[in-house]
Image (tube, rainbow, N blue to C red):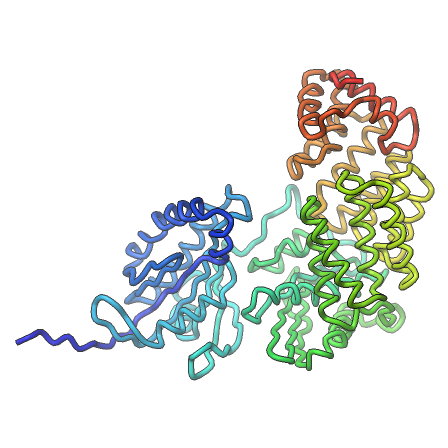
Length: 587
């Protein structure tokens, strides 16, 4: 008699995993992607067996595994993410392979080779919702492991999963030891003498990675509104957004950024509806001071931003609310596409490469096409053009003329638009018009007192104009407002300008070297390092820096820099050229 081959049922923990953005990686370099995948699989797949599971399928970049124990499944998923984080440390960000993992406990059919059933489908749907490097679990998994493993969970609420009849309650898993963002060097930052806040990037709960820009825009508009209040110390976006994609301990965020309050939240879009949640937390204690959920039609999205800002301000310091709070004067454009274009353009400009700034201009052109009165988009576009002119990526005269025209258009739309004043300041620096540069950057600071980048640029203008002590004070303020700034190498360049002008050559070299570590393709950094080494008598080091400079800018000469460098005073430009000649740069 033939053996009975009918399928049997059993309760199993299912782990489904795949690599976020695998198709993009394959499109970039197919051979390297396959090689890297196999290398990771050689390390990851054996972990399944060590935790008592078995591999069901490894098609493409995916992994499907079955475990008799939900504890083993969850521990395995956690170890996979820990191991992958370590393996990715030395990999360029654009080539990193990040697993998304979903775990479910459910009834499955099996024939000892394959397994089938909704238990697997739920795990696969959870994996699709997970963020890169993250793990999502169903409530069945959460209830089994929450008190048995040293893990923390975040309740994401019920989610509708495709082709699953009933909503599933979903939890995000994180290991406490892995939840902290990297610490800054040195001691934790002290609290300012007035209320202080960091606005973390809002979590995209829509299941669509493209909506991440929408979530970023919500958080950034709230941050911008708060920054207009002079009595509130607000950490700049470029620092608070370094926590994007991390599961953070707000107490650690408070210590690292030196703030008393942290605002976090999430955004979920569905059809023509939007749900925004926000919560304000006292960083020192972790106590929740305020929480709210806003369900609105999508055309009310800007009113939601006002409501959240009002609520946060009212909670932080009610006694000064009536006196200090005024209605936000600047509204974002009443077209979501224009707004998203600005959000994307801002990010692209911050990358400071030829390709990224060119793409930023395209996005900002789109923003002003959709909303011809969008002052911020005009201002940022003008800054982007000025930056490209400084780098030699655009015709200098044409680009600065277009930047001036755009900055004037921004001021006509909103006289308090800080990016417009920054553009005027860049033009002043380019033409060595000291008073114009300082005045423009000062107006940007006045318009937005917590705008870290404006403080840094004001410091640069003071340094180039011959006032190093004022420069250091301004740059310090910018760094304090945004201690984790994506423009960090720019601040170090400004420090180098100031220290060189003051004759502090060792400090100038130190600042230039810190910046080179972050952006090694920036020629001005090598100019500052080489000249400082040369004037300090460190000829060998000056020679090496000049070799790196000439590799980036063939044909550069000391005479050209003496005539055209950004220092306003001739004696500073001559001293710079003297240091470069000491290191062997041709005249």
